[in-house]
Image (cartoon, helix red, strand yellow):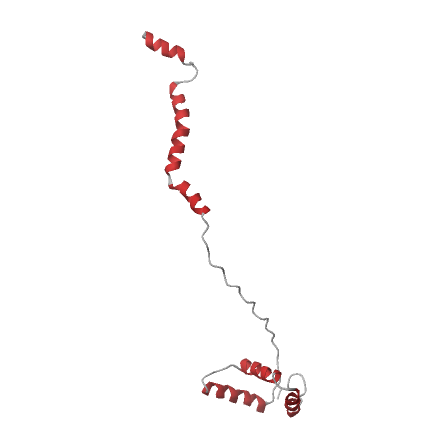
Length: 133
């Protein structure tokens, strides 16, 4: 070895080879430089931006439905069918349930005297299911 090579070898510790010094000092610098340029670091910044979303409309709760059975005389049931046909001819087809609900609203809007008169015009029926014929 020349004298210059001996001086360089004497100044460096013998236990650590030259390559490991270069790698350990170069890796962290190279990684941060590469990470700063990659688009993956741009993603968290994009997530930090909160998009203004329009306020969701408040959903109205659906009314709870109650199922019930009613006994109708055939003549009054025929009136329901006739009313359904009449509404359809007027351009507003309805279901039997809608007719009954409209009737309840109409009765609720009556004066007390008209309500009593309407109730007295309807004969009372025996409760329960009709007998099988």
